[in-house]
Amino acid sequence: MSSDDFHFLDILSSVPNNVRRHGGDIVEFIESLIDFVAEESRETIQSSSWLPESMKPPAPLPPPPTDFSIAPANVLEQVTDWISRNRAEAAAIATFLGTGAFLIWRNRRSHNKRRRAKRSALGGAKTEVVVLAGSPQSPLTRSLSLDLESRGFIVYIPVSSFSEEQYVKSQSRADILPLTLDITSDSSRQQAVQKFTTYITSLYHFHPRHPPSRKHLTAFIVVPSPSSSYATASLTSLAPSTWSDALNSQLLAPFVTTQAFLSLIKAQKSRIVVLTSSIIPSLTPPFHAVESVVTGGIEKWIHTLRAEMQVKGVDVVQVKMGSFDYRTVPGTNQQLVYYPKGNDSDIQVSDEKGSSLRELHHGVFDAISGRARGTIFVGKGSSTYSFVGRWVPKGLVGWMMGVRKGIVEGEKDERLLSSEGSAEWEKVEQSD
Image (cartoon, rainbow, N blue to C red; front, side):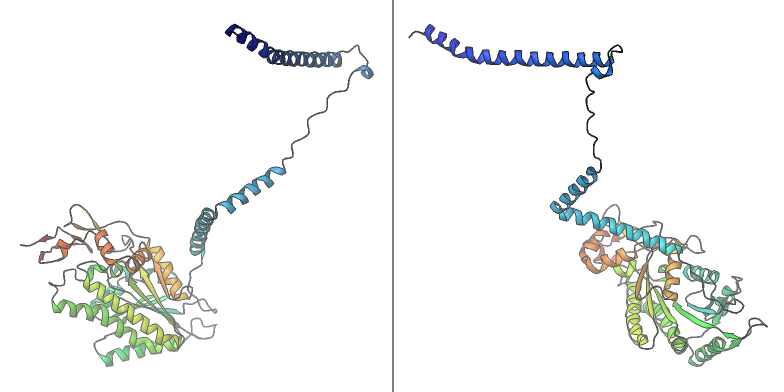
């Protein structure tokens, strides 16, 4: 067969397919036309007013209503299926939302608590006494004394000199009183504590119509010295007299003062609250050996004191402080937080604003009232730097603070500038 014959056969074989396709198109067109004509006729007949209702075709039924109650079930099923397929992501989201809700709830609850000292049931006189063992000139001592006095406490501040006594009296507060206590003399110290014990245990007539009542020693608070009072220098340049002064005034003085009141504290079932710095002792940066050693000694003393007082029914609470904004009280005492700036030989001091003193006041009140126990963290960076100092490698911590091998080794020219209680390191150059 020739090629023309094959071509003719191909045309013949395609005829049925073309007929089927064109036939289907014609049928679909006829059906759509019939549907259109029927719909138009139905609408025309239904809208005709001259035709009786009995002869009009029935109206088409409305579409079935959508059941919206099925949607939530479908959404719930989808959420359940997603959680079953993504357990890790679902657990992370639940943890994040739960932690955020808990922190918000705890913060609101903490601010809504009523923090006031107890008063006498008869007459409403002040009966709760607090001893604030710290330097009277310290902004921290002054801030705490004013806050506790405003909350209804009678505050006594131990003083060892006439100038400190006059400083306390100059505050012109009726319930902030000096307590003369010479810790260098055993007999003088015992007499002062015995006189104070008599004052606490004696009966007082606060009102002629009410029976007499006694005062109560609620808490004994140990306030640390400000960071600016510690010597800041390298170990090679610290004189023995510097160590001796620091250990006597910052370590031995609180030990002896607390020891003098232990008998009264055990008899009154008072609480012992010890405030300590958290940032510098946790990081142990260079040139801060004195503060690190003193705070470390105080923390070990707290552990021993807590173990001994626990069997006597006396709670010992440690308050680890971060950085606070002391601009509301005379004397600025910002925590020293180091960060690298410029080249490796620059060590700067951050003057970033700290937490409000209200947070510290709330923490101290919760400690002396029994709402907080053990060790609590208050202030900006207190818990964070404690975690970093405990778990992060020391080499990494030093690198984050800008400490390099060439900086801390060898002899250096160190200069420390002091201005109104704040310190700033100048450039530390390695000598030849």
